[in-house]
Length: 132
Image 1 (cartoon, rainbow, N blue to C red):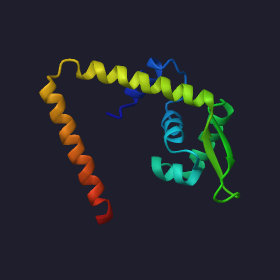
Image 2 (cartoon, helix red, strand yellow):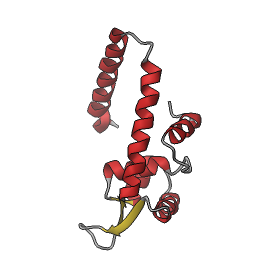
Image 3 (tube, rainbow, N blue to C red):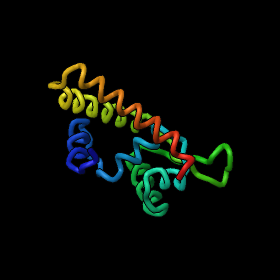
């Protein structure tokens, strides 16, 4: 599901010429922001210094901006810009189009079963999070 080709197809479907490595960060900033680089790096499983450079690239593209945290003014947090929100909206539409194509031949029963099992998996992972 996380094959690089799918990311490329999603970016193309969204009409974006964004580096593949930047798009999960952009989406994370939009969904979770304002967010500090350390927290973002932990969330995406990348090194802090790498994420910091990638956020700087997103900032240079006008997709995110950095501002002082309201909790700790020494910390800079990434915040989505209006252009970044437009980009993530396009990514969401492309993702939905890909999903519709993927599931178009599934029966309603099979799709509902998938949803039920995914909910069970997600709930189980949430219950087990404290066990790790």
